[in-house]
Every structure is written in structure tokens, then in C-alpha cells.
Length: 183
Image 1 (cartoon, rainbow, N blue to C red):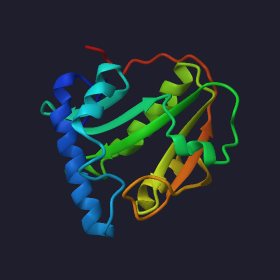
Image 2 (image 1 turned 120 degrees about the vertical axis):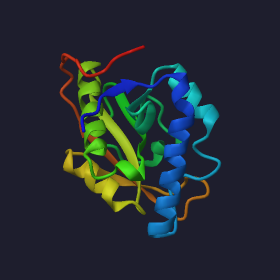
Image 3 (image 1 turned 60 degrees about the vertical axis):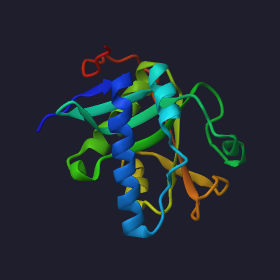
């Protein structure tokens, strides 16, 4: 199967939320907890992020089956993290999500690689992300792409486990970007 990463549009909100819901159920079944719940993320925040163009999706038969949000918003508790890179622009990754029925096809890897190229193309000096320690496979994915752990944050509401904070320096080199389309 061949998939394409595209900028999300307003009609993707429902399938993104369905994908997130399925992932919440899967994580709760596997580890008893999840980085997300019925409060966060929510339709309103996803719709706002789509409106400003920070959400990217992979679709199958018209529905989003994987997504990631990328922007410059850092949660307030990031101030407590001992980040190595403090100079230059920072791209922050949020909510990497792959529908359970489409996991193990390389979609998570494709979205992380896409985020790396996106950061380079737009001149970001580094990328930051936090990953729930209850999802070690996600932490492993980021580490496989060269993201290095710098600390933990414990202050996200309603979460029983900490989040590992990782970052990666990029080479801010504008690149040709043929696999993203805007509608």
C-alpha cells in the first residue's frame, strides 16, 4: 500500500478524533493508561490546529488513519526541562497518532521523517517532543530517528506516568517537498 502525507482539512476532524479514540482504547488495554483521554485532545483544539495548517494526515479511503501536529507551541511545563538547544527556532511535535488497524506499516516512521524534513525546509534549528513513558514503542521510534532524551516532565494533568522529553538538532536546509499537498 502506498500512502501520501497531506495537510489536514476541516473534514478530517472526525476521522482524526476517531483515530485518537481507537488509540486511547488500545493504549489503555495494553498498559492501563494513555497520554490522552476524553478531555484532551478534543475536537475544538484539533479543528483550530487544522485551521492554522499545523496538522498533517495520512488518509485511506478518504479517512485520516494517521496524523501529527507540528507548530511552535511549547507547553508551559517545558520551561522546567533542561533542553540542550536554546538558540534558534523550535518546532514542537504533538500527537503522533496511527490508527491501530494501520500500525506496523511504517506510517509513524513516515510522519517522523516528514517532521524532520519539514523542520529543515522551514529553517528550524531543532525539534522538541514529549512522549508518554507508558508508550515505550513511541519513545523508541523517536530515538531511532536521532531524538535524544533530555529529561522528564510530570505536570500534565490526569496522567499517571511522566513524559520523556526528547529533542533533535536539525540542519536548517531548505529542501524540495514533493509529497505534501495543500488543498
